[in-house]
Length: 581
Image (cartoon, rainbow, N blue to C red):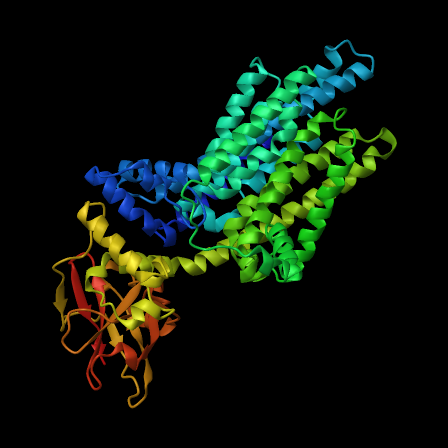
């Protein structure tokens, strides 16, 4: 029964995450993913070169993510759900690696304790390991919850972000290889760790830090002093060589001024601490305070375990993992601090890095409690369990907020998916380029990228876009109404309601046209409360059938003209006009 309960506790975060991704994922490229479309076309045409993978993306060389995403794209005709599944898989492997680290060290800890208590290296320690340690399980369950936490919702639902999970996996695997006591020789372990660090380096720029943070684990390998010095020299040469390769033709599009950052130390500190605190709380000011507490706790553990690391080597991998998270957060701060701490709080994609520090604290905390003398051990255990319960409660609250935030954005993504399907009928109007209500801007703020990418996907046959759509001006059934807007103003609010009666559902967007044009200059989301419509049509599906959008005179090419509203009927491949106007 205990094994079943423990297994369930480990599986719950994974199952919840899979359900979250399955419910909220939308198979449509977002933002930076559109920049990969030209790469796919080159591959399809056979014109690809290594430079296409080597080219900078922002300030990063994402060689391995480009290769992985390209393989998945060609295997699935660029189904975005494939990278999402891979991200979950990478996170799962990361948890397995941390679990192995914790298991290996807890076994050694019990074994040492058994010897100290007079055991002969057999019965007593084995019995303790077999019965398990509740504190150890608690630490690993917390680690599992953090690894699969929904607070990273932006990364879970954005396939392009698998690079974050790949870097985390590579670094944890490198540490695992270096500190594990296995049959491989130190040379092979260093070689494997170097491969992992190399992959991390060319997945995100902060992957370069993995070489530096892994140095203590390299030095901890068994052997003579001379051998350790040689290994350290070799490791540093590999790091320098990686940096040299990385710097080839390195011309970042956006450069960070260190001097300007030094002139704003409070802004930098606020951003850094807010970044560390963002997995716990996402509130200006309060996030920085929580981040300060997290950072101070890590500094304490570095001091506590660092001064006797030769006696408590089980803490070494967690110190390395925590330090990697801290240095990566500093790296992110150097590049993003100019945007203010609010950007660190609102961008959930950075929490995938910050969570590593929390995992390190959870594991170091249980090692600290286990390592103290018996008279005070039970007090520390009580405090540890209390903090663990508080952390679980916070994660539950954050998960609810992540679900609510993602749910509110779901309609806009669904509208954007419909928008992409109909892109051949969308004019390059000021509305679609600049309006915050533009469905194209949900796909990317640079709408020209979407149009170019859509054309590429059409050429290589990966997406079906609406073509030869029939315009039905006088439908037999009522699809909705366009209220007559006030005239004589520089802008007006177009509003009404819309349904798809044949499909017993409501459309995601309404499209607006001018005069007799068979193209659209604006869109509106069908998401406003409409209990009266639901009552009339006798269906709860129409509780949010109303829509409204602000339209500027800049969007209209004719001063005085007729505005028409339409919905797309995908079953019959028709644009159906709403009544009124």
